[in-house]
Image (cartoon, rainbow, N blue to C red):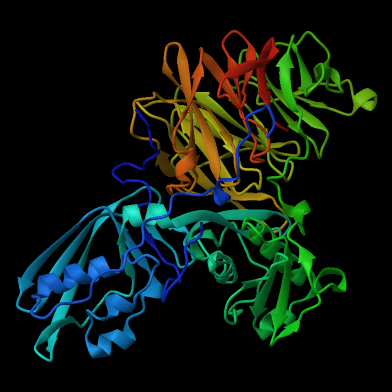
Length: 584
C-alpha cells in the first residue's frame, strides 16, 4: 500500500491558494549514497488538456454555477470561459487573481429563485503569495451565488474573487517553491513555502510573491529588504543564456547599498530553484540597475553566505566509545577538548561550529556537559549546566550561539535556552508541559519544532521564535500542530530538519522496523514525491539529518549502528558503536 502525507481530513493539495492566475498560462513542468533532491524542483505529472464548455441556452441557476466551477478547471489555466457564466457587470469586476479555492468535493443547491449555494468541502488557505495559512485545519466553504437574467439567460452576478478548483487539479498543476526573506537580524535567509503553477510564468509568480513581503503572519520572524509597494512591471523574461531579467519599479533603484545587496540575495536564492536560470538582472524603466560590485547581472549563487541551510561541515558529530568524535569518509576523529577524550557517559551531543563549543547530555539525562572544541589549544575544563534535570533531550545550538534543550519531565516539557552563561526557562504555549520526545531548532533560528511522544501517528508542534535585531531570543510563540495520518506508525522517536522547509520524523512502526516521514513545517501538502515514508529495518533510537538536501538522512539503531540509505533503497552500515549523532 502506498502511504501519503495528509493533514487530517484533506487530500494532498487541498488548499485556498492566492495566486496570479488570470489569462492563459503554461504550467511548470548522485552518487552511491542516497541523498535528497530539492523538493521545490521535482516534477509532477501534468494534468490533461481540458477546454471546458461554456453556458448553454436554457441552463437553470444551479447548472450555471456548476458550469462556472467546471470552467475554472481549464488546462492550460484560463478564466476566459468562466467569465462567460457571469453577468456583464461581474465579468469586468471579477478578480480571480485575489484567490483560488481548492476543494475536495462540491455540492451545488438552489436555495431560492435566483440564488444558489455551492458547498466546497475540506478547504485550506494560502496567502496572496501562495503561502499556506492555518496549518492543518480544514473547513467547508460555502459560496452564495446570486444570479440575474440577461437576454433571458441566467448569469452569476456576485462571483467570489477567487479561482475555485478541485484538489486533484491543484496537486497536478501547482509546484512547491520557496520564497526567501531575512530574519530579524537581516543576516540569515528564511525560506517560506509557496505553491505556484509550473511553466513560463513561474519566475514571475515567485518575484511577485517576494516583493509582496513576508506578510503579517511572518512579521515577527521575517523581514524583506525590498521597499514596501515595490512594483513588478510586466513579466520576468529568461533568456536562452539563462539570465532572468526582472523589471522592477523605481523604488528598487532607491534602496540603500546594504538593502540592495540583501534584496539581490533574496532574488538570487529564490530564482535559483527555477530550472534554466543561472543569472539575474534587474531593470528599472528598461535600464539595468548596477547590482553588487556595480555589475548589471549576477549569479543566482549570490548571497549564499546568508543561507543557513547550506552545510558548513559535511562530517557529523557523534558519540562513539564514550567520547565525542567526527564521522566522515575516513576513520572517526576525536573532537578537540576534553569531551574528545574517552571515559564520559554521554547520550546525545551538539556542536557549535562558529563558537568551537560542544554540548553533550550525561548518560542519565540529568545534566548537560559543556566544553570547548579547539584541537590542541582547547581548554581541558568541562562545565555543567541544567544540573537537577530529569530527562534532557538532544541539545541544539541556534545560529546565534544560544543552546537549547528540553527537559522531558514527568510533568511535561520544560524548555531551556542558554545564552552565554544564563539559563532561562521559556514558556512555549502548546509545547511546555506536553509529552515531548524530541525537538530541534531550524537552521535559520526562526522555529522551534518538537515531536509529540504520544499518539498513534507522528505529530510535530511548530513554534515561531521571536528575536531582537541582535538575535537574542525575545519569546517563543504558540505552537501549531502538523500530523502525519494515513497509517498507524506510532509516536515520533526523533525529529530533525531535512530541507529548508521540512522536518524528518522517525517512528518505530513495528517491533522490527521504523518509518521516516517528511512533514512541511507549515502544515502544507509539500512535494508529492516525498509523501511516501521510508522503511528502515531494525529497532531505531535516533535520526541524523540536515536542511542541506545534499547530505543523506541517517539513522541510529538500538545496537549502535549508524545506517545510511544507498541508491538501491537499501540501508547499509556507515559506522559502528555510534550511540548518538548530529550534523553540526
